Image 1 (cartoon, rainbow, N blue to C red):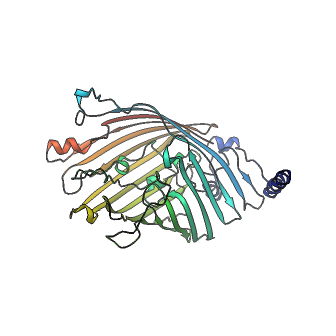
Image 2 (image 1 turned 60 degrees about the vertical axis):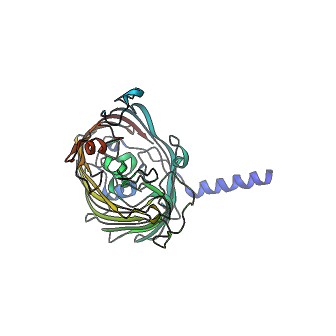
Image 3 (image 1 turned 30 degrees about the vertical axis):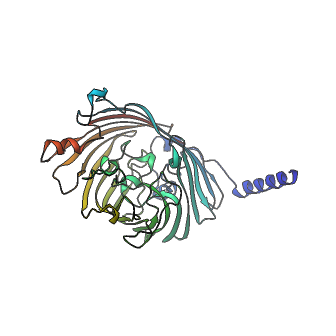
Length: 424
């Protein structure tokens, strides 16, 4: 035991000496939102899906040659929510109230570490203590660079689909994702096992990705297709398609002004000019059980121009039942949003979003329209962000009152949220 301890101590000392580590601190100019150089911005924005690796988020350990970087981080998000639901779907005999799912919540309490190794590997591990089940492991991956044009990532990470999900968690304009990505589609059959939504989020898998000529990005991957709540291998072969029942995904982007930071607003990024156009497709193949084969496609646009942030997305989902379901029909759903943010002062950002969703499928008339507004305040020299948002769920174009009532079941008509976020 003594020999093991001495060897362990020696290895730790050698590792620390080889790192030549130091802790970077924030200058007063940076803390007050002064412009950041483009090259520095790229280095600071190493993607881990939660927070940038930026030096102003606490400290970063780094070797002198930059081949080894270690960045511990913490991300906390606490919210106060008020949600008001329409009368449809409520049973007054059971004293069900129009106000529900309200009060305080903590969606994220993340601790993790990210960095680089050997000048070729990026890595990231994050644990969400506020989650349960498989979602406690928010992500864990390594990314190996053969070259800037050819990289391989394996583990649990974000699937390459939609700008809204791919934005760094602590850098979003709104404290909640567009409802058109998160709301489950309404099926014309009573099948509890079939509740797909358009967004795909985190999953386990492997992908090849890179940037060509610092303008053309690509991501091609294979994932379990079971989402972030499942960390085990549960898939089989598809009897319908005769291929592994996995999620096959690809995303291709054009970034004419160089790699765009995955942010929707940062007080230190008010002097940059970036733009992104993207298309993405994926196909979630299910095995022969009570489920569906889902095809998705999307288009995205995003722009950062000085104090402005502008984005728009449109996406489509086709749901086809497996043969076991004995349902010949397939159903089509679409959604999209446009949003804009502007820094009216160095630490104040205002934003608006208009969200659309054909939740009941293209075979029926009617869709949801969901305007929202937000105000963000970035507390100087603290890494604290305060947000206040309001969203209204409207319904338009339905043939019958029953269709109108069913379309927004489970979604609050009025939503107000105040969020406090801290990142270190």
